[in-house]
Amino acid sequence: TSAICYIIRDVCKALKAHFVPRHVKIPSSTEEWFEIAKGFEEKWNFPHCLGAVDGKHIVMQCPAKEGSYYYNYKGTHSIVLMAVAGPDYECLYADVGTNGRVSDGGVWNKCRIAQDIEDGSIILPPPQCLPFGVIKVPYVFVGDDAFALKKNMMKPYPQHGLTEDKRVYNHRHSRARRISENLFGILASRWRVFRSALLVPPDTVEMIVFSTLGLHNYL
Image (cartoon, rainbow, N blue to C red):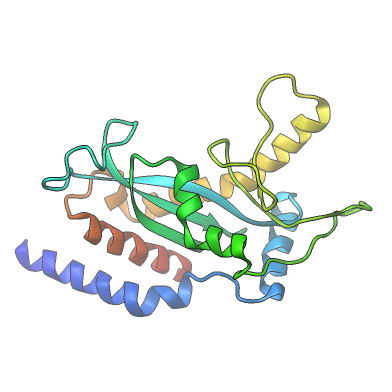
């Protein structure tokens, strides 16, 4: 058992350093962003979508001398995996390591991709007209109610007093957003270690998560 502990840690460390960067990466050109948006439009009927954003709690045992730092609202200790999913259930970006007490919106605001979009380091495709539209609208990411509504982040309408147009939008939004939840489901189904609490330190949990995401995209 003690030997396996070292082997898993060393292998995951090597995967995170050399394998994951080649398979979990943000699009680097406008053409690549357009391909993602095309996939969401053709497969999930949501145009101008660049990714589905969501967070997942990776449950672990309480780290030594950390008290309630990693304690979340579900009554467990966890770190948050914040992921951007593409139209084929692939992971385009991942942030792992924030303690479970932070909300999804708070984790997203501190993510490098969100900050780079805000300061212009990541250049998204320019606004264009929707199909059969005449007004240019921006390309966006989609998330649930935990995220703040911004120029490049769309969330659903509140579930009360919905008009027919708003109900149609929420349906389209749900089809695109659930891709991130499906990504987490596939991840937990393929690597059953995520179905129970991980009995390792937070830094090892982070390496395990990144390793499985890289392998997921590769497969």
